[in-house]
Length: 283
Image 1 (spheres, rainbow, N blue to C red):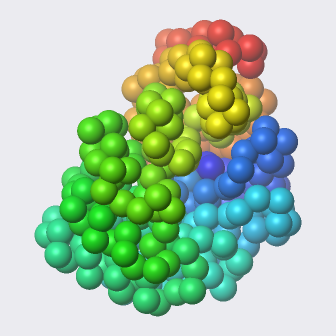
Image 2 (image 1 turned 135 degrees about the horizontal axis):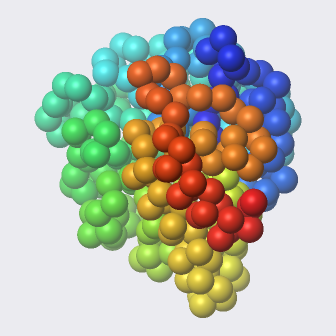
């Protein structure tokens, strides 16, 4: 989920609670706070703690709460994981280090150390387009043998890699799609679900893909995926992560702007986004 900011660029607790309620009313099966779309990279440790605490309180046990705790260094990732655990998160999602380029063995030690530092379930997070770091299928298979490493969110957009994660890991290891155009394909390949940025805006539609699939209505799931695709493709209208925030603001869920240096969309780009939202019945 996104992290709302007020006009003074502070975390907007009221808007955060409103968004949590909107997502739960939309039928989501879990909430992922302070992830990529939540601008984890732009938040202080104290802000991260506050966001998780507020989300956990507002969710009030209705669905699991995941917290993003990845960092450049192992030391900071462990600290963030411990903060999330104390704040009440039910699991952590740990993105690979970024800026630096650790080897696969160094990544193994990174995740092993984090897993050992917490009693929480740990979800790996592969997003090479943002981090420049890729988790190989061989490494994920190895990490899947660690007791509390329970799955992976794969935002690579590489369906071959995603299916290799599925093929080489145990049945109870959850491979989740992080590229919203590939939710249906991931489910067909044996994936367990998705953590979808577009669910901020259209939670019911994203949930429909999953629920139709698990209920055996493959055609309904496919059609729902195709209806969702234009919104995910619209992410290219602006710099990450502004489009989801712009979309929420346009449909009346005020979450403020992305933190600088990211700017709002131009009028022309907003018009295109409005057209996408109108096609989805949101305007």
